[in-house]
Image (tube, rainbow, N blue to C red; front, side, top):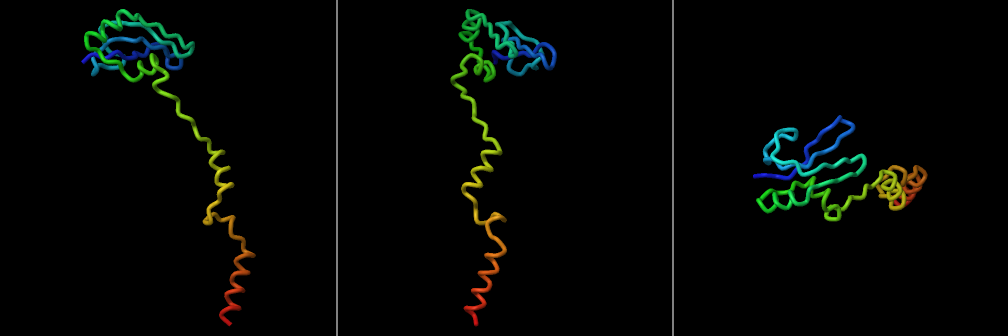
Length: 120
């Protein structure tokens, strides 16, 4: 089966990607059949030959998730990250009774004294 996928090129920290048609089991840097365009993440540049892509899709090539995310960004919304600070604030607002800071030693002494008085 043929797939339209990203082929990494360039230096490690200066990546750019070729959008190619290749067999689905081929290596990331392996042989490819046709070159459709490129994507540069540092400048957010995306250029694709739409006629070639339409022809390959008509011939049965499938689009990988990475290329689909570039072509249809609305289809894949970004997830919101929950910060640890927000979690700590929620814990302070809704403390659980098992937290160490909730029960003070003075309160424990008072409860013990009341139990002793009831028993006597």
